[in-house]
Length: 226
Image (cartoon, rainbow, N blue to C red; front, side, top):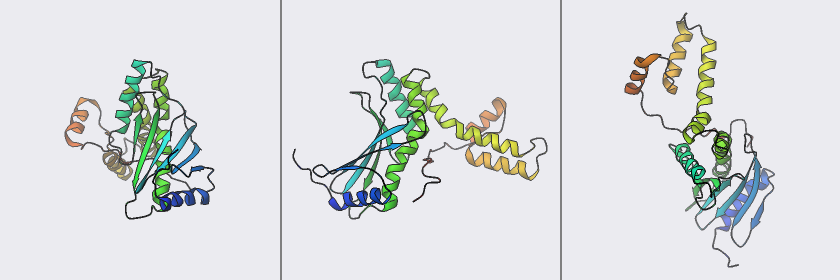
């Protein structure tokens, strides 16, 4: 096999990070490819990682062991729609669907031209895909087993956090009483884009006044040790 040209300093920085954090991994010296697995929460329990190092960059791929059936056109179309809907607004990486074999993966690209990646850059490239699979794995499974449409599956993955927060805030205040806590609830709801109004009038006001939301929460590494 012909040896690929890749940055050994970048590869060494990634290997040092993994070694210091006690990860078990393998490294292909000829190709500059690092491989390891990671257990995650959710309906998909484990994802397979491939970090591809090139001359001035590296790309982290997290691959789902569960994929769509490439011979089922309906499933492939639904999964393609799911990936498009899930990807909309993401600021760090994206899901990918291989239309040839149904493979599903998440990709993070890191440009290292003129610098070595920091520990935080490497850490984010690994934990971001894990966080996204934890958030969307239930939807992937629902689409594969045809338990939901692509839109329903994405909505189920993205709504619980907002619904849970709304419920928690509502429990903290007496809606009839109002007061300072009621004002706080209203301000938080407005900032988070949660409409407290009811009926068509409230929906029309929300459509007219609320800006389009951009997804930036990666549900990344809260509680993780460096």
